[in-house]
Length: 292
Image (cartoon, rainbow, N blue to C red; front, side, top):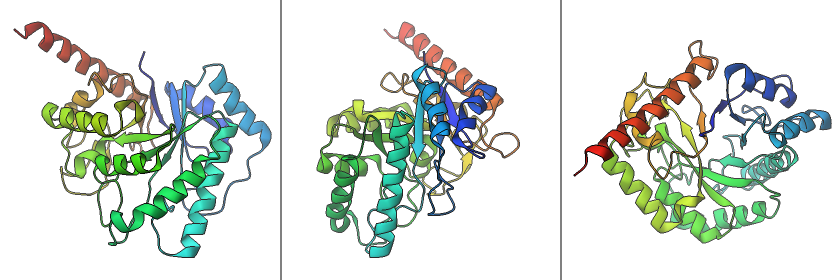
């Protein structure tokens, strides 16, 4: 059965996350392990970490992703920023290890116009160093919306990094909104098939470990990172094409949508996500039966 989850607030302590997930019917969770607005790490109580780990180990939460803070930039040429980025990533890995997380989602950063060729050696060194600290989770590079010099506007760019690093638990998290606004219309079966085939050819589709499922509040190719609630944005019911793709349909699906009140994903969003997934599978089955 597919895991339908959501980004869950850890306000008040990580120990609140499992109950909040249960309250909205989420099978999986994604969390920030520190404030996304500061470099300062949160000092988690061991007992709080133990609550989340226990929930994961007994299956109350079926998938956990820790999202690293957005400030991290492994491509920077500023020594102070690189040191802060390194420390923040290692802190995220330490907490992910402690709570038995399945994945750590990371935006690589921005080359600030210098290009990937110039920044790739540094990115590889930083990732190889960080990966030595993993104790179970995968480190998942997320595609970007493509603004400015952000790395990963094309998921294939991330495949290049993964191949250069060459580690068995370095993988991908694909965000549907980011793919769409960066110019890959994942509501179009042909474009989605082409992306899946290219990723499988370059790094192996098994390295794609989870999906961020977000509708887009901006047009395809706009490079504007604006999430919309499920079926309420530019992608609409076309999102079902992605959710039902044979290579993707069993991946954990994590919502990062605004929700009805602007407070993040809620029970209604999860219901809509599951319904869209089912609709996509039904359409594919009907199409397959009608095929000559």
